[in-house]
Every structure is written in C-alpha cells, then in structure tokens.
Image (cartoon, rainbow, N blue to C red; front, top):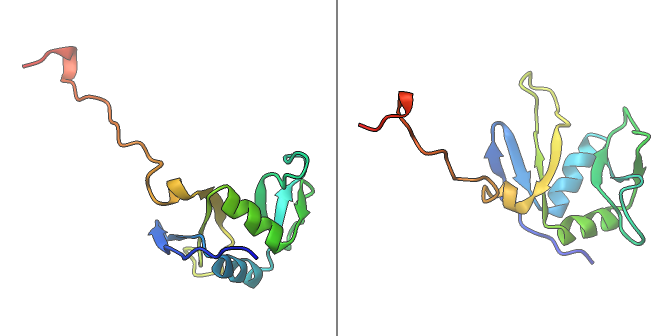
Length: 124
C-alpha cells in the first residue's frame, strides 16, 4: 500500500503544489486524466518518466499505468505535482507539472546572485 503524503497546497502564481495521493487522483480524474509514463524512458522494472494523460490524447508516447505504480514511482523519486484548478478565464484547467519536492518547497532555487558592480567597473 502506498504511503500518503500530506499536501502543502503551496500557491505559486495561481498554481498549487501537492504530494497528497488522493488530491492528485481526484484532480486528474475530475479532468478525465489517467496515470501514465513516457514509453521508452524506463529500464528493466522501471516505470520511466511520469505524466498525466488526458482525453484529447492519448499521446502516442504515453502508456497508461495503474495509480499504484504511478504513486510508487512518484514517492520513490520525491516528486510533487504543481497544478492549476482554473484558467485565468475561470475554466477548469489541466495545467500540471511534475516537479521535485525540493523545487516545490522552494529549496531548489538558487539564492546566489551576481555581485553588484558600478557602471564602468569602478568602485567609489
């Protein structure tokens, strides 16, 4: 049985991020989505790159897999789902992106900045 991870529901520019299995499944199924992987990206016993496939597909490069298999790979790789509930026009959105949990928590972004210099390269 897959471990369920609580959602952070972190909002980012109209998007949310979650790791909660039930929330991901409900979001995808409400839009006709199914769990899938990209054909040819996994090795022996490896699911490969995860995706969600929607009814206007199926994408020829995607292969439907079970939710159990999808969530096993999702948790094994420390992933999170960045998604949007509605478009700017208020319609149901299918925007989603699978990201690392580190990126989702903001720890993946570099805080290093280039040193400030004055125009002309002089220091005053």
